[in-house]
Length: 104
Ligand SMILES: [Ca+2]
Ligand SMILES: [Ca+2]
Image 1 (cartoon, protein in one colour):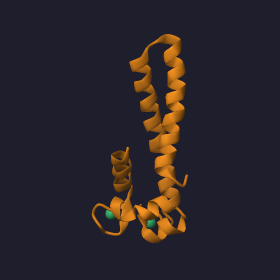
Image 2: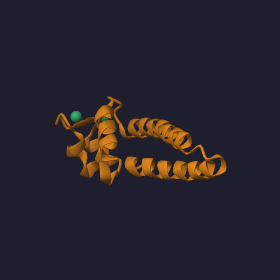
Image 3: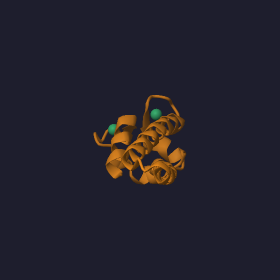
C-alpha cells in the first residue's frame, strides 16, 4: 500500500479487464463498464482509508511530513506540498482524496 495512485490504477485495470470479458459475453457494454467503475471506486476508497490510517502514526487523522517520510512513500513525500492545499504542513484524508481524484 505504498502508492495510492498505482493501487487505483492497478485496480481499475484489473476491473476493466474483467469488464471487457463480461462485455464480450453479453454486450451490455455501458452498464458493465459503469458497474466496473463503481466497484473500483468502492474498493479504492476502502484501500485509501486503510492506507491512510496505517501511515497516520500518531492517529490524529492527518499525515505530517515526518509520518509520510517514515512510511517510505516516495511519491507522497515528493507531492506533499502539492497535496497540502491549505499549506498547514499536514495532509488530511480529504486533501489526499481530492488530490488523487484530480490526478486521474
Ligand atoms: Ca498524524
Ligand atoms: Ca493540509
